[in-house]
Length: 177
Image 1: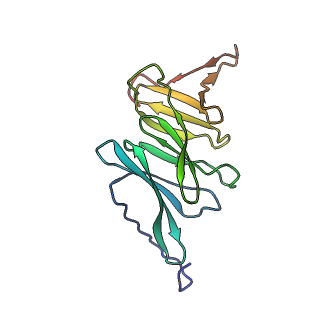
Image 2: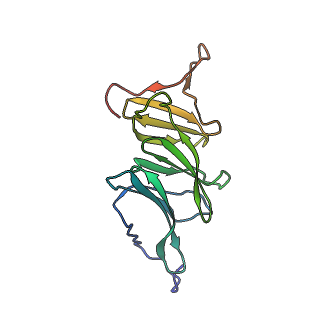
Image 3: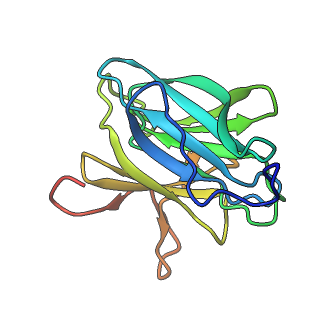
C-alpha cells in the first residue's frame, strides 16, 4: 500500500533492455511478480524478476540472471495455492526450468530433445499443464511438439490408448510453428 492508503491505477517499470517476453506469477505468496526476458541481438541475454514494493508503490528488480539467446517465452509454474516449488520455465534454444529463491535463481534442469545433433531446432513456444504442473509441452521450429515430464526430465510424448505404447513426439503440422 502507498503512504496514502490507495493503490496507483497505473504502474510502470522500465527494463534496461528491450523486453521480448513476460509472465505474471500466480502464487498467492508472491503477489505482483513478473518475469521479463530481454531481446538483445547476441548470445548473452537476461531474465529479470521484478515485483511490486507495496511501501513505495513501485516495481523494483528483485533478481536478474543470464540466459542464452532471447527467451521466446517464459512462464511461472501455474501454482495458485503455493504448494509446488517456485519454478520459472524459459524457452529459446532449449527448455530450461529455473528454481527461484529469495536471493538467487539456479538452473533446475535443461530439457533437450536433440541429443544426437550439433544443431538444435529453436523452441517457438511452450505451455505448462495447469492440471499437472509436472508436465510441459513445447513446440519447435522443426514442427514437432514434445511433452516433457519435469520430475524425470524425460520426453513423455502421448499414450496410444489402443496399444499402450508411448510415442516420443507429436507432430504439430507441416509448416513452421
